[in-house]
Image (cartoon, rainbow, N blue to C red; front, side, top):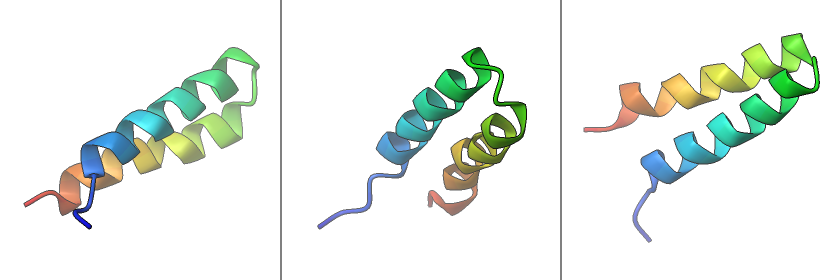
Length: 43
């Protein structure tokens, strides 16, 4: 099974946006880190 870094980033972006919209600032920032992380892993 191939790794889907782009799909993972999209999923985390969605979760981060939901948390942000509900004023869960700390957790939104935490998940936003997971949005950026796949860009460092992608070959």
